[in-house]
Length: 278
Image 1 (cartoon, rainbow, N blue to C red):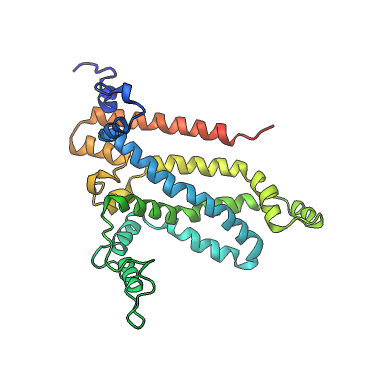
Image 2 (cartoon, rainbow, N blue to C red):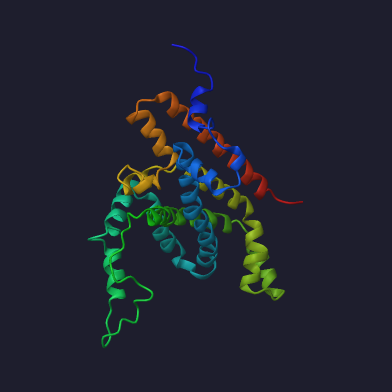
């Protein structure tokens, strides 16, 4: 046995034969994407952004609406939104796999029914909905399905977080704003958003960490393969494959440490961007 040093990390990063002089060309990034670690990292970031950013864009106004408009109904409604978060991930992924099945999925059945809806020989909705079944296993669509699952599952969790933060904002502030003639939109933009910044930092940090650790959703939906061309293979899936399937635990450990460093860097960046200004 000998100390490998940084050999495993260099093996994972695959920088040896990179053509750095072509850094600004499309061929450079195509070549980089063809390498396992960078492809998996890109897929993870892509789905993390596509599924994570909308969570907060929806959760913040949704929490504000529930908090200010629903009164006694806020707790039951919030419980419904929170239900996907406490549901088993494998069960959710299997349900989505069935819903988006190409031949027998409910989603395809509904979409094609709308697309082929006929009125006097005319299909008025064919421009908006497909007339034939969509192959959801197509590489162009696989990431979107995984991202939608992520959004659907965690938007309720973020709504609960923002609701908790909203309940700490004194009502006197809103009442004073109303007296001054502030509209509901002005109250939301100039009172709610600034006072939610600490919770936004916390929630976004959790989203960053959770997205980069994404595993079950993509693993189950793609049948552990990452889909056609491995377009939905995440860094965690690559780590599992490298360690458990290939038996290369040293390289798998290097992937884990690189992922940890990347999470730490993004958390630090989030801290810089969300830090309150004087």
